Length: 277
Ligand SMILES: Nc1ncnc2c1ncn2[C@@H]1O[C@H](COP(=O)(O)OP(=O)(O)OP(=O)(O)O)[C@@H](O)[C@H]1O
Ligand SMILES: [Mg+2]
Image 1 (cartoon, rainbow, N blue to C red):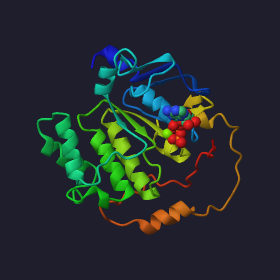
Image 2 (image 1 turned 45 degrees about the horizontal axis):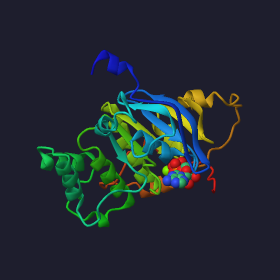
Image 3 (image 1 turned 90 degrees about the vertical axis):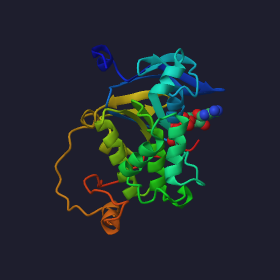
Image 4 (image 1 turned 135 degrees about the vertical axis):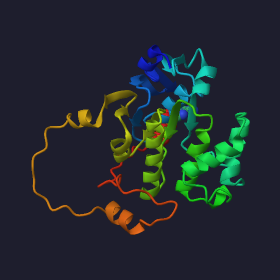
């Protein structure tokens, strides 16, 4: 990577607008994502997160504004953008009839990799799916499917990864597993843009958090910066009771393949208020 490329953001979004008929979903969205960082786009149902991810991954055209991904303009260089990214959509793209290993092999062959077996086995190991690798994906739990889905999207080592609500519908332990996967990716230098409705997900994972609301980014900062927006905390002595999530995670912890380390377990799982549309 040249010095220039290292300095420029992996993703740059300026004034992006998108309407569907008379519904103005994105009304001028601006943000940058630094290379190798985890950026969380937080917003309620219908805020426009998936719409924005679809624009950045060239599946949808913006009405106005510009966006560059890996230095390539999404409108002018869609092919180069697609070669630079992977997209794990909101709904898992795993083929149930195939085994986990076969799903990976399929993608590796579609991408014309020279060593598909090696790639598949490496990813199965990396995502703690080696033992389950020869089972049909139909028999996988939600967390295993999601991990397989993310593994499939990483074949070919794209420098930028879009994850649209990677943990929606997963139980707390499976969510922690996916978080660890995402963190591993970023520590290996991959840029991750994820969308989420879970405040604690953004809090645990993201280097920067942007809140998409009513078509624009209303806040964008580190967790510490966002916390400073509220008045300083007053000190109160309270006896802290374990949350239901603490109890649940303590009870389900075991040493199996799907087990997870405990350092991420949150005190609370706060969900953004759902807006019905
Ligand atoms: N192809 C489309 N045609 C018409 N309206 C659409 C289309 N795609 C999205 N919308 C509308 O745009 C708005 C934003 O949708 P989007 O899927 O981007 O939201 P989201 O933030 O991803 O929500 P969720 O958290 O539920 O996934 C919604 O009101 C949705 O109904
Ligand atoms: Mg969505």
